Length: 469
Image (cartoon, rainbow, N blue to C red):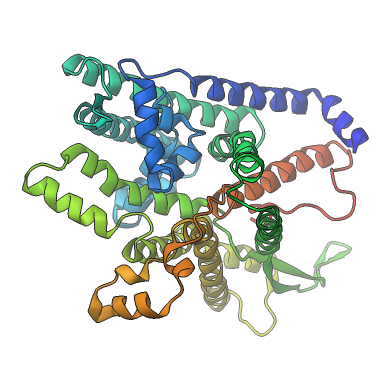
């Protein structure tokens, strides 16, 4: 292992890429401690601590705790991801965007430019909603804002928008000049930095306050290992489509006549469907913050927010449906069965029993649809694990005609109300950590193999989510 790590320093280009990535992540972490001016930080953190088990707690985890301290990077990369989702959705219905998506590198640059401008607009909207909400809120009869007014609103909008744009720039620089996907690595860093705090909380609950017994901790650790093994198993899972190449005579050489396979990943979208779903679910929260609780609109939004609040049955249902939808949608963007079938036909290949061309494309599309249903349900299961452990299913909140009273009378309390266990590295966070780590190692290994070095694993390669593409 030491020899493999040493080989990383022997390649100048790879060494520069790794050092650049670490430097950009250090800058990102440094900005996570620069506070937004005009905020009473202690009062705000006390007020935000009550939202730790909600959707805002999940967003704070993505930003590495920047949101619960309202630093200059409080918005993180979520505006950029939301802008990407909107443009990808518009690409299905807009002929102009669809044409740009097919124009290759030039079209991708234009779409990236649109995404950046939309990120600025969304950041300004979210920052304005946060500023207006902060002026109205108090904690323990103490205002969150020291000097409210138009000056505070303008400075908050400018600070948070600039921070979001800078985070977007950091991610793009890591992707272009570093190792791995920049946006994924920023989320990865935001989650991993919470590990010492999670260990400290665990130690306090076991040995100081004695809220948890030692056997409970062992069960949690064993459960976490099982979840990690399950994630790695599914992430490396693939459906192999057999491909047969016919023999061809080129000059004096006989080419082809070999059998191979086309690997199709079970979870081609990785963690992106979950992130897309979370981005969509933040819109009601942002609009509710902007409108407040006064007036007819505020009252209606507050009622809607209670119904679709974090942990409620309707929220779970919408969350699962969005994850499954974006699993299929993201696959349709990154994988084109018609193009793959055409490439196989041009190389003289065919799937045994399937005619080349349109039949092959339909077969690939059918197989991808079926395994993506499995991948979407797997993502939904992983995403709901921490929520169920902390808050339960809450099916007793359903109306009477949907069986709410029956669930309340017949299901155990730990199912309805949860175990009140904040499983920090479970579900989505664990999926991101494992997935991004596998992708990054796979990219480093590809760099080493290109330069005739051994990879990190001599027996078998770690296949990332994009290894099969």
